[in-house]
Picture (cartoon, rainbow, N blue to C red):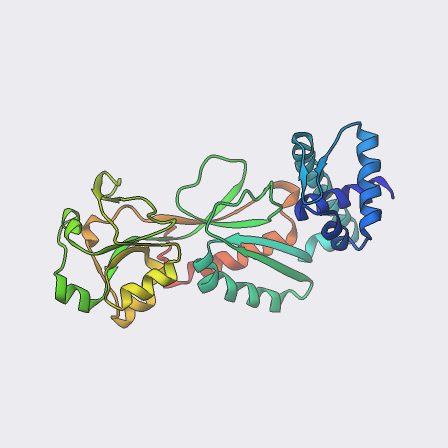
Length: 301
């Protein structure tokens, strides 16, 4: 096995945390992958993995090496594409990560339309409610909701959403309409992770007005929370895009609008430089246009 193939096997095994699964990903047998990794470790003079009967884990050296190898392979792919003329045509697999509900509502239809336009591209979308390190985990693009920390990544703003408190008209008819955040202590509130996993709800432009609530119910699914709220059991906090169909239909109403925090920005984040391949640039341009045309995301330049 040559050095380049060994590097590809190393990345595949590291991502799968399994020699068998990593070997399948690159079209090899498990013994071939094991021999390739063994030869690579011998050449480097270090252990890249710790192995047990149940687990395959990267060593500290292996984790650092993985990031460097991904960079090498990405640059090599970019060079190959430039040499073959593919640098102008979106081709290959595109890996995207985004919040689960946002992905279901907005990203999924954008992706399918993009695939129809670019037959040489395939897309893998991870919809998950955690911040994914796109460099370490091998993603091309991430959609982020909220302020961005300093990083070496490129970001393009495509919209914004509000953090709203909502409930069913029947609930408010029975329990009354809160006119001040402090009145929430007398209401039946629901906590939704990760949006408001704690007991402190913040209001005001800078989130300076803090109300300590006592949730009767805590759930990890915003879809479940909205369904329960729609049924009139209580009130919850949500992002405006998550409840916009209910607000339009009148099945939910927002309260305390004058106390809402500043809107949260929405960005598409990607890696700059040669790793911003044609498939990445094409999707960024396509998705940004579609998202900015979506009324519920209230985009401002």
